[in-house]
Length: 133
Image (cartoon, rainbow, N blue to C red):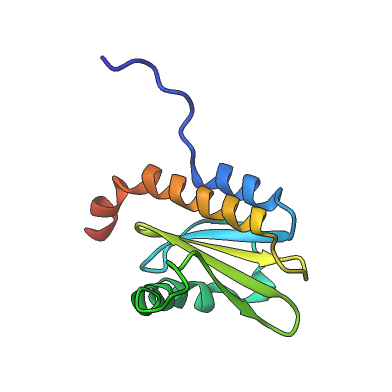
């Protein structure tokens, strides 16, 4: 029997950590096919469509970033009139972070990227089961 593991890092824990960061007002975590795992973005923001296309946008941009001298793509920020939104992707997941009206600091972006990477490891084994539904 394997040794007892600590609590798994899940989407709800990730949402709580992400929203505690400077500049983040709400966020969601989705599978790359658009299925929402968890989130606290207010329904009246109607973010479902934008969040659903974000993984495709990130994948396409990632390919073109390799051709530039800018380095690898870390995230994508979309500026709306009311608030910017930043998307992070890793494995089969995308994290959407709605700003509280300000830019995210480099430290907040790094931490959101780390959270997304850690979540992708937690949920990677679910991808095969999820696709079969």
